[in-house]
Image 1 (cartoon, protein in one colour):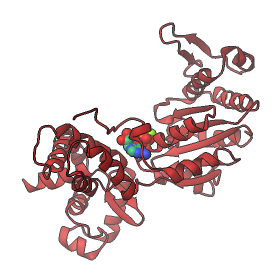
Image 2 (tube, rainbow, N blue to C red; image 1 turned 30 degrees about the vertical axis):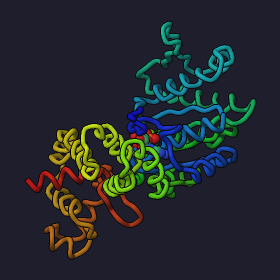
Image 3 (cartoon, rainbow, N blue to C red; image 1 turned 90 degrees about the vertical axis):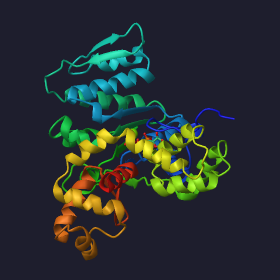
Image 4 (spheres, rainbow, N blue to C red; image 1 turned 45 degrees about the vertical axis):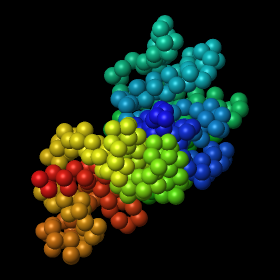
Length: 366
Ligand SMILES: Nc1ncnc2c1ncn2[C@@H]1O[C@H](COP(=O)(O)OP(=O)(O)OP(=O)(O)O)[C@@H](O)[C@H]1O
Ligand SMILES: [Mg+2]
């Protein structure tokens, strides 16, 4: 009866592991056919990369995807982009352009992987290579459909090089043959970049936020798959989504674990609890480290939020959990949101990781 685990978490998902996002697929698909640039925001692990990859695959468009989190400097940014261009254009075609670069990169083909390794004289702190590479992409795009350039974790530009926002904006605004997609998981930083009047990227594109997967869609997805291991697939699905609140990553993680454990526990009613506790247990070290990095107010707010649904900004919460003035709690909520520990859904703050929440409850109950 047991087949391969139909759930997957931690990597880009597609095919049978992917569900919903129907409206988003259409919307982004038509966006990249137009003239405007797109800004896509969501908290960590909501499925930005999976969604964008799917749109790009289905569109068949030439594209470059770069996660800025791993980019070290301006030259590295240029080199990483160039490396990805080599994957979609023949070396011969690029030669002519590269000859006119202000700094000529060194290019070496790895004989084993066939991948090219590129570097621009490191340490010169020069942004010329980046400018040259971006302008080259625009020229390459002119002979067909525009090239889609996706820059993930875009808020990292500030870490890569001071003033990079200004340079990028100055270069990108002249591009006619590139559709840019900027993505990020730090909502406040992304909004600063694209919505603050004195920011160079002010209103450079349309902002779209990606939410969780709707409960109806996720239920169907889980039920269809869990039916393979238990006849109680409906209540099991319901319990899973009750714990994860439809968070894409954590839902897949819990469902995956339930599937793995299903052979071991006969009692279907307990299996979700069992799986959730197993996940909590396996992250005990991480959670302990995270908890120890918090200050006292953070701890009090999180401890309260882990057992109660009352707004942490209310008087009642403050009385119950001793958190003090609403202004203090408010700045705590902002800080914890910036760190990704809390996420904001509409006007409500919730703990992002349901297993961290469970860990707090379990630990404090001992
Ligand atoms: N459409 C979807 N259907 C089902 N599961 C999904 C979907 N999108 C995301 N997931 C789940 O969430 C996980 C994270 O997805 P993904 O890596 O695309 O998110 P992300 O927002 O790019 O994350 P990160 O913040 O780490 O870059 C996936 O491994 C998968 O388990
Ligand atoms: Mg991602």
